[in-house]
Image (cartoon, rainbow, N blue to C red):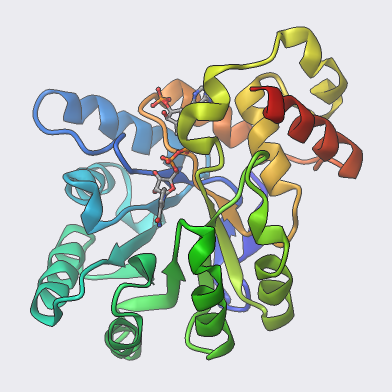
Amino acid sequence: MERRELGQSGIDVPVVGLGTWQVLDVRGPEEEARHEVVRAALEEGANLFDSSPMYGEAERVLGEALEKYGRARAIVATKVWTSNDVEAEHQIERSLGYFSGRVELYQVHNLVAVEKRLDTLHRLKEEGRVRAVGATHYSRAAFGDLMSVMRSGRVEFVQVPYNAAETAVTGELLPLAQELGIGVISMVPLGSGRLVRNAPPQSELEPLREFGVETWAQALLKFVLSDERVSCAIPATSSPQRMRENARAGEPPPFSDEERRYVAALARKA
Ligand SMILES: NC(=O)c1ccc[n+]([C@@H]2O[C@H](COP(=O)([O-])OP(=O)(O)OC[C@H]3O[C@@H](n4cnc5c(N)ncnc54)[C@H](OP(=O)(O)O)[C@@H]3O)[C@@H](O)[C@H]2O)c1
């Protein structure tokens, strides 16, 4: 698994991690099976895990899986997401409790109360409980606000949507991230599943085989990772086998512009 520095944070991250929205939001008998997804990720070196208090049970389930299979090896990225100051403190205490008292990458979710939340996250960083502070937004309508936060010098990384069918970040946001040395985590790299549901026929993947691509999901992930401004993509999956498949997309060689254009054209039809 290739690794890259998350901007200039000094933190080395895998190019493929695991998103936990929906897939780890389970309770009861399904939990053990989802722990196996986390185990597969750790075994493949895909050791960055993205979560949020907005994702139901996901933080708790992730924390329990890491407790079993290797918290020390994991880079946990979670978020604080509320306009209420008291609730923000509660969210943070709960999250720190799930992850052995520390969160490597702490993000302000959807820029909610961003200035106040950044104050708190920077305090946690000074206390040694957080290694890097970031901000996320899923909507291109908010990229202007997100870029203002980037220019303020208060975030070391951002999390934004980027996939073969959604490339709005390439306009201004990724160039700014590169200029400022800010890391980039790509959310929804498979279009929240929409892009993988209608896979092109296997024969269409032939030109991509020499890049180690065996499946359409890997082609989509390699599209994102071949943009060197991206530090890490975080596909979500409920399957250990797919986790391993996704991790293999993090092996070199990257696509050139030609293969990226080819995958984008296939994605438009997907
Ligand atoms: N900050 C924000 O505002 C925000 C917003 C959205 C997402 N996120 C983060 O980004 C992560 C990823 O986004 P996402 O969960 O929306 O979607 P995604 O990663 O683009 O797609 C996930 C979907 O793809 C399927 N999938 C995964 N690997 C596959 C494979 N190899 N073959 C076929 N299908 C595959 C999964 O189904 P199976 O479970 O059946 O494999 C799941 O339905 C989230 O989990 C979350 O951590 C953040």
